[in-house]
Length: 392
Ligand SMILES: Cc1cc2nc3c(=O)[nH]c(=O)nc-3n(C[C@H](O)[C@H](O)[C@H](O)COP(=O)(O)OP(=O)(O)OC[C@H]3O[C@@H](n4cnc5c(N)ncnc54)[C@H](O)[C@@H]3O)c2cc1C
Image (cartoon, rainbow, N blue to C red; front, side, top):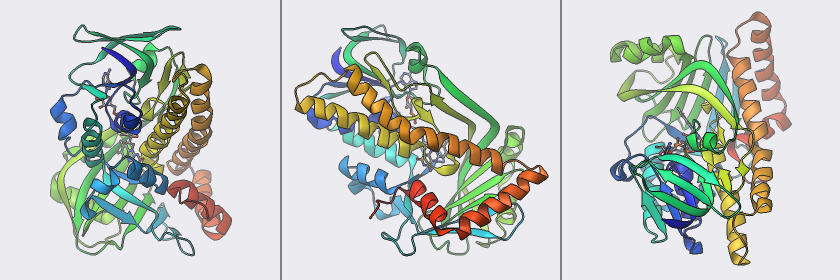
């Protein structure tokens, strides 16, 4: 139970970080409270993750992208944003730029499965399942982790990647700002009559928002956000009524729509840690920043963050230097904060504005879409921020 790096949480962030460092020879432990079977065969959880171009590049490097079939990855070629009951549409596409795709949708359970397949290939990655972390301490010499089965683990560096409600973050004494939107996000898949032309829709309606995201064939991922008080009625609505409701809210654009499988609900709580590092420890993924899903950036930030930290560690290994110095960890924190802070606060402001239904806010919503739509530099900036298309 002696490792170079102990990672708490084998979710997409923890798995991708371990895989990123697999060929350094470092001994890495992944500690996960779920079973090995749940990691090897994760169930569909309703989330279809919109991946930016930067994320695709990182997943290529991790060997995951090549493992996806064409059916697993659905390109998005344009995005349309609507507000209230207005037919006005803000359109985002890649016109005049390359590549012709804004991003790709890949199901979260497929990403988890393939990241696990990749991590399991390496002997220097030890995967400890069915155990939770009960306490952590770090000192000048090492990090110590106690596990729920009574074992203790010692490492040079400790990583908390155990979700936005991270217990490890708390045990490390790192505070976090939490925004409970008092809303719920309900996700599911629906089949439909007409083709979606690879267009993603975000409809900021009054009372609810509805995102309709294009998957392979005549199928889409539905994301409804609504006040928490509406959760039970939406989740228990019989399929026929649910189909008719979504169809009407979407203006019958795709003709008949039909629920496929179950609906899944997630409370909308956004989290940003006050710092990402402390002595011999760092936060990754949602444990560092848990985003509201409207800008589809949670896992994208998790991937870029683990890429930054893994890059710093690789450089240290190449120089035969220490992998957990304060200066190394602070470089990661500085660089990652630079991208997460504006994205986190910007996203929360968008959510606040587009869920505000007072008359002045409605006017501001209308104007925001029209101004952004008509000013090419603003639109380009939004597009580049959302898609991370490499600058040319
Ligand atoms: C509805 C919805 C839609 C989304 N859409 C997008 C999108 O389009 N694009 C995007 O980029 N992101 C999106 N996200 C965000 C994305 O799903 C998350 O950012 C991502 O899953 C976070 O990964 P993670 O590994 O940090 O955390 P998690 O996925 O939460 O994994 C944490 C892991 O840690 C384990 N764990 C927890 N506590 C302990 C403990 N004490 N001991 C051991 N193990 C522990 C858990 O079992 C779990 O396996 C969406 C999220 C939601 C809810």
